[in-house]
Amino acid sequence: MAVHNLSNVPVRKYKRETSEVSGCLKYMIFGFNVLFWLLGLGILTIGVWAWSEKDIFNNLGRVANVALDPAFVLICIGSVTFIIGFTGCVGALRENTCLLAAYAIFLSILLLLEMTAGILGFVFKDWIKSQATAGFQTFIIHYREDPDQQNLIDWIQEDWLQCCGIEGPKDWDRNNYFNCSSRDIGSREACGVPFSCCKRKSNEVIKNKQCGYDVRKPGFNFDVSKIIYEKGCIQSVEEWIERNMISLTTCAIFILFAQILGICFAQNLRADIFAQKAKWH
Image 1 (cartoon, rainbow, N blue to C red):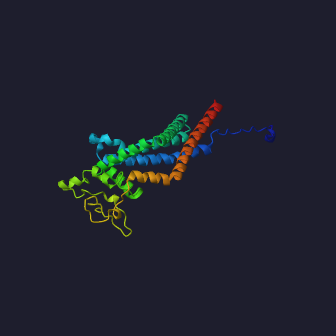
Image 2: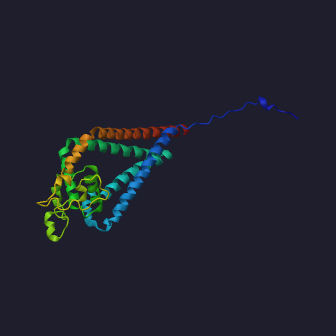
Image 3: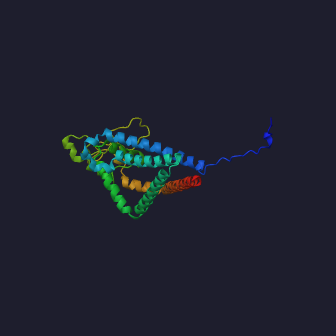
């Protein structure tokens, strides 16, 4: 029986084909966008919950002020963030060129809108100021009607800007509860301002919700300047922007750079996927 010497038989070595897709790039896009996906889902959930709590679906008469509704704004922001995060996350993970293309397009549109808004905001500063004034007036008028708007304006006046009204406390005369003539119909808040206009006291543990009563009443016996903020919120926000101009500019540049980077990464990953497909075909 013949015995074959296997040591002399040539062994054919197969070289494993390596993927053309960069794993680092793929999972970088995936990891970054899964956070945005979850963030968008959270914001969207909060917005829908706040919207449904006000039962606005059954009260279409309130849709007139929908653009100023904080719940509606949260729904819009959450939806956009969710969609962009979803396309980037799933597109990278599944190496789906269509989703990656949609991701790059969404980021490009968002980038274009942001740059356009920035340029228009700089050119039409007076128009932006007038629109902000009109929006703030709407907030004041509907202060007691919408809890979301009430919480927002309280946060603006008390925590963010330390201001009161649009140009000053007198602007609260636009609200039916704080109008001086409302005393005739039994409103205890007549000729007053919301508690968020009051200056904080260093030793204050529990917020005095009645601190703004009667401060605009003729013949008020105390120094109003020591009780409430007298500066309007429009002036305060202008001063805040001037104080934080460098930080705001740096933040805007960082956001724009991150979006441009995301577009480039998505396009590079698509090119890698197409190159891999072309190689196998």
